[in-house]
Image: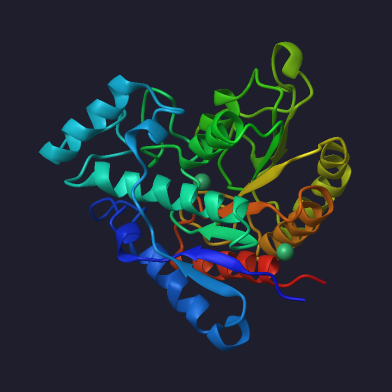
Length: 319
Ligand SMILES: [Zn+2]
Ligand SMILES: [Zn+2]
């Protein structure tokens, strides 16, 4: 049985691209669109291209501070300097490009809620490091966190499940909702003692009455498909069994694949197929199929194309 997957698809998203030689550039999404097009015949009935639209400032303010949003707009006009301490350079138009990334993620959320698509994927979304008041780690506006706030505040959903398999800890989302029990977070990543941003340890389980609603699973450098699956079966399944999500967001960063220039993990895209299939099934069991996937990191473009295509296929095919 096929499900309908909306894929955010458009030039507007390619403009979220830092100047060469920065590793986060437009060729990542271009390579993914190319790879997905190779399966156009198989997936023709399942994929719907969704044109990106800009988010409104009010939507960005669901998570970010007004002063920070103004700061990004000014730096974007000037087109120089950094938005953080040296990882995330400003470029001309970075404000508008960021609004398109957030807007594409929110448009997919709205289409899923309206029942016009079953699931969604935004290859340039998943900017999980951005904080309420600052950019971080190539991430300007945190589309994932904004989508979560939108689902809680605007739609009034009781519970959102956020799963993050990027090689880096999704600190912007994780600490952004650390004390909020409505947001269940499962984050599998390379041990923070060995990789940016240096956070995300197993003892961090949430604060106040949100204790137990967060779970970090850390993997040592060199971990491959088997180590990932073993950790998932031992820890993630129990955590998922205790969640009653009304919406699921998967950040499917591709930088855990062997050959990524920035990390030390050793997966293949089998991890992405495995996780996306499992969460797809869970979404149909628990929340009438409401799941959105976001691209996130990944700096070897061939890996990125394969991993994200695997995610889209897993959401399109229901066994
Ligand atoms: Zn489905
Ligand atoms: Zn990453």
